[in-house]
Structures are given as C-alpha cells and as structure tokens.
Image (cartoon, rainbow, N blue to C red; front, side, top):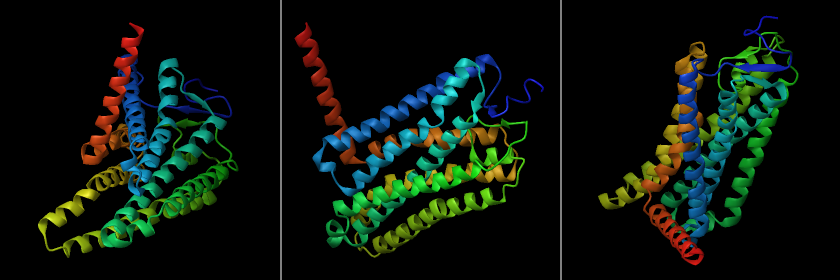
Length: 320
C-alpha cells in the first residue's frame, strides 16, 4: 500500500485545502473566526427572541429555529476540519464519515424546510392579514417545526443507511474538507444505482419541493402587493420579506452553485470555495441580515446588550 495515496481499510482521507503550512495556519485562523462569529451571532438571535415577549410571533419562532439549525449545520463540518488542520491529520473513520453525512444532510434539509415555513408565514401575513393569528396559531407553528425535524431526520437516515450497503475501493481519498455524500459515492466499488435514486429522491422531496413552495409563496405575495394602491403600503409589505428573500437567495444560490459545479467539473479549488460559501459564509451572514434589516430585531438586540452590560458593571461593582 502506497503512503499518501491510500489509507487504512475503513478510513477516508480528506484532502481538504492547501498543503503549505503557512497557508493552513491562515486558513485555520480564518475558519475559526468565521465559526465563532456564526455561533455567537446565531446564539444572540436566539437569546434576543427568547428574551423579548414582543418577538414571540411565528416569524421569529421560525427564525430562532433557523439560527439553531445554522449553528448545528456549521458544527457538522468546521470543528472536524479545524482539528484536522491543527493535528496535520486528514484521516477520518468510516463511522465518523457516516455520522458527518447524516447530520450534514439532516440540518441542510432542516434549513430548507424552515425557510419554506418562513415563506409560508409571510404569505399568510400579507395575503390573509385578517386571518393571520387564526391560521398561524402556536399549535400549527409547533407542528410545522416538529414535522420539519422529523422529515429531515428520516430523509437523512434513508440516504445514510444506503451507504452502508456499499463496498469501497482501496483508494479512499475525498477531494474535500468534509465527507460530501456525492464524493463518497464516487469512491464506491459496488453499484451505486440505488444510492443515486435515493439521493435524487431526497433532493427532490426536501430540496426542490421546498424551493417550489417558496417561489409559489412569493409569487402570491408579489401579486397581492402589486394590487396595493399606495406606494408606502407596497414598500412596507416588501420590507417585511427583504431579510428572508436575502437569506433564501444566499442559501439556494450557493447550494446550487456547489452541486452544479461539482456535477459539471471535477473537484477543484473553485468548488471548495463554493462549499465554504455554502457551509460557513451563509450561516455566518444570516444573523447580520436579520439584525441589520429588521428594526424590531435591532431594538431588541440593543436592549439585550444593554442589560448584559449593566449586569456586568453591577457584578464588577460588587466585587470591587
């Protein structure tokens, strides 16, 4: 067995980024900073919503779940990558790879479904404002989120379990910084027809259908808003959707870019950069998009930080 080209049986080799030690040091600092910003930013969103009773509405309920899903989604890939860079080890076990694939798919699908729920919430709020509180009641919102979790886990479990039936070649190099499901399938020596069918099925049900739901919701929203006579009313209606539209465009744009580029061309630095956008940059930017574009969130976040500062000053005063 050649060293550098193959690994021990049962292990995968994540080729990741540059071999240069200086470049790896730079990447480690960059990715660690991005990860910390993602976790802290999304935690602040969750804490802000939970601490302000004015934000206990369906839209912010979905947003807090989206922030939690973003933290988990990023945490499936980034910590392992940082450990690999730190230890100069690129090996990951078969069990570790399967675990990463399961959580990566589960939280990715959960993001899709939560964004769809948020689009439906905006659709009801703008197209049926008088019935909004009746339709978007707490019970329905809870069931929608619970259903999203269950469907995401089942879809991920279905796709992950089919990988167990595969046998792999001795060359188990993955040209990526995490166990990308499509790249893992390329290493299989056995027939992957069933796996590809399952992957396309999960992609259509948990990727394409939610996107169609979002597009349908916004087509109805735009149609309804355009019938509003006043320009001020139109601006107010569109402004309530601006943050969500930005997140949807970023999420689906980078996601489609990753998988379309990987389908057309072999893995390269470009596809790696696109994957970084999808797995790290998008979850990192979500808190900024929602806090900077939303007046209620900005006000509540400011009050939360003010209370935290006052508490800290009071604690220091007592200790001194």
